[in-house]
Image (cartoon, rainbow, N blue to C red; front, side, top):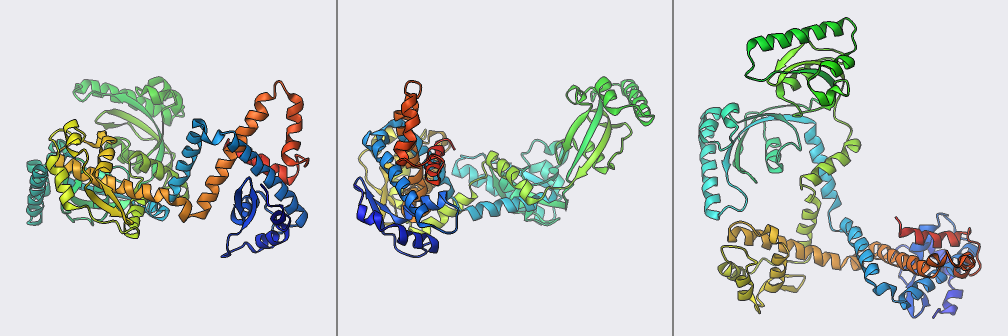
Length: 530
């Protein structure tokens, strides 16, 4: 039911509250509809979202109150019809809530700080050499310790003055060491595995790092140079393929042809037409030799060095690289774009690399302190490890051995989390269940603890963040309004045009469909499609 006394006395106090923005005040119930209390915060939220005027007139507010009541009555009708219990509604509503919750389950400042750090790294090119000691993810603890010992041996040799290239050829497990002596050349951010990149950018030329762990193993890194980023150049080329074992006569013949093409270009021939006719790079030839914008490590070093040494508008003489002969035309050069322009591209790259969790990790660390999360109980952990099979933690015998165990693993905000919850998590993450049992158990326990923290925080979002609760409720009501309208009106439109024409008047109590109140109702139905 509607408390009409309260409703009739609502307009003036509410107008004053809206004008004052009601900061720091209590949240009284302003009306009851169908036995449900409507608090001032909900009414103000919907009102402010649909009314941009800075002042509130009584006639506008009276009109809006009537519209709001009718809106809530339609939502109540949808609930009475059981729409809020259907699988379609639950799936859509929970999907929306989960999407909205993402923004509350990460530390946005930490995310932004990491993107900014990557951008600053992109302003520089670094050159480094490394010595790799193989140690794959999931290796046995003994094998990991052995690999780390070898890496420390390499580090001590280098610190005592051993030649880096010779040591690399002798001890590195990187197959490319045979021809590069461990030198990786110049690179920039987002071009190496994250832990390796982070370590290199912390070094100064000539410095050698302690062993750095990556998914490949342990790296001992020597920084050899830093320079400002080269940017990108827009180029086109005419290419003649030469195999590396080609006879000198073949090379000479190809060079003679390329010299003729260069002479024709210098005499005024169209570069693009010659590329279309003579270039062996058929993909770019179709575009008149266009390679687009070329940046760091996107081509072979000999080609890259050449195009960055040229001037805008210049056409190079034919030059040889390990893959053939090229004539290049350089159009334009540009440096790294401003942060605001580059931001989304960096985020996309971090997502692709799986490096988009810095904010979430920062939030988890903060919440563990806020909710006083305990350390994992060592006795319970040792029990899990002792019973673990050599195969997988989800092995049926392992699950059976733990059936009925109620050992507490840790507490969070006074709540206990035990073995059975952990095993449910293990069985739901079988793709992570690879490697030695000690390594897998440690990894899964860490992930489980993080998941518990996030799930607990997710369950408290409506209580912690009033704006989240209001937005979720707004969308819930919007779905219900759309669905009840769809059921009662839009699905009948083809056979009941007269009823469809009268329907707005039913909702708005006779108000003009173009009025402010009706536009608000209409906006609620549109939320479904946003």
